[in-house]
Image 1 (cartoon, protein in one colour):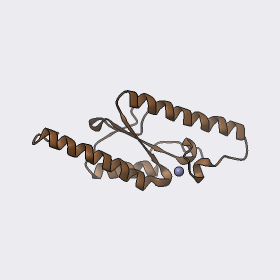
Image 2 (spheres, protein in one colour):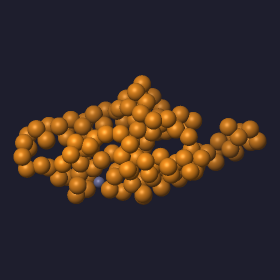
Image 3 (cartoon, rainbow, N blue to C red):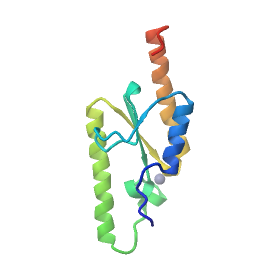
Image 4 (cartoon, rainbow, N blue to C red):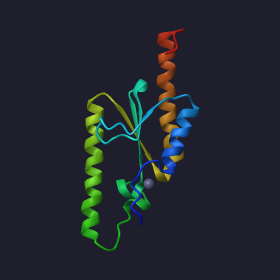
Length: 134
Ligand SMILES: [Zn+2]
């Protein structure tokens, strides 16, 4: 498996374009936040991580897969990733961020979930601020 743990993966682009189309604005890869979150929506105090199932140990077929060779290395590496994700999430939540995870095996349904939460927040905001839509 190629070490594609990089930026701008196809699922991440999909999430970004969906949010943008719906009028949500965001910043990318904020280095000042735990875990350098992929997508940050400051106005909604929300964060979206787009996680590859293998690298981040999703509980799905691909996420449970372990390479046959160098299995100790991989177990340590992947468990380290999972522990780090968990710690980042705890730290962000403690700072008042709402944290979403979009898994690559279910990008569309996870993105819908994020969208509906953001829409609810936006509606609430519109109701409470009245005409000054900000
Ligand atoms: Zn998965």
